[in-house]
Amino acid sequence: MNKIKLAILLLSLPMQTFANTQLYIDNYNVLQNPEQTTPEIKDNIAYVPLNIITDLLQLNTTWEYPYMTITSETSTMTLAIGWNIAAINAEEYDMGTAAMYFKNHQLMVPLDIVAEVFEIDLYYTTTAIHITTASVYSGENKIEAIQTSQLVNLGYITTMNTNNICIAHIKTIIDAAKQEPTDFPLYYGAGTQVNIPNYYYFIKDYTFTGINAVELEKYEIYQKIDNGITTTQYIMRDIFNKQWYTISEQDYNLIEATTNLTDWITLSDTSNITYDDIEILHTGWN
Image (cartoon, rainbow, N blue to C red; front, side, top):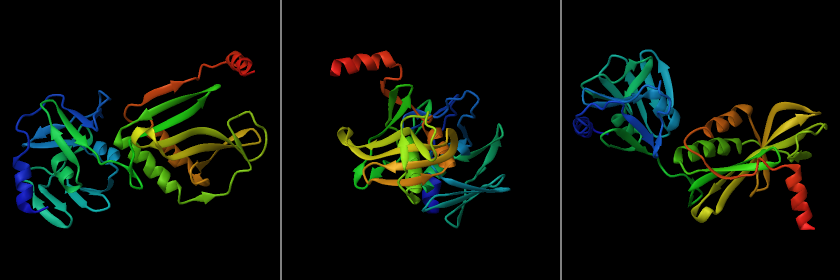
């Protein structure tokens, strides 16, 4: 980014101050919590809570008062409380106004500058700010959605999400877990009432799909039960490559947290199925 481009960017921001401005990422309203600090226009610059941008867009942050450094694989940006200067990839730029400030105990950062530095697409409407994230790929194939199936009672609940944020978060965690291969488990399955050592029971599967719902990658997560006692040990099965991996409790919890992010569509729900239903089906098969 050069100084002329930065100056043009600052001058081109929306002039009006929005009341109750909403923030959408891939058409998902990230301000679901009414207590969440909303974006605002200050000195002709759009500011948003730092944690929303860094958490959802997977940017790294380092805080060393009064400096906050935001990094990605390709760029670095350092801001400071009370300073007008932003250091972008080791070059300093005068923004002419506060580079960062506190509001409701949250750090507010200049969205347009952050978007320019980290190549984030955004646009404004009269009541909202919209961010569009990059598509996610499996090899050369664009991932259109992620599906997850969970065993509940005697049936399954299958849901789907098409939001790039959710797809990117889960794929990043799974790809990192694939660096830790492990041996094929001796005992595994869908039942939980099993009183044998080193048994792994099925929790969920995650399927990345492409155009026309073609399955591109599929993984199953299992949790260890040792002699009837549930542990915090997890393993992951790569269905297509027939490989097992160790996945940490922390990474599994991160995946679970991601499944609460953005809107999921329920594709099917057979969780209310009973043993009587199974008996009727079995009779029909005969």
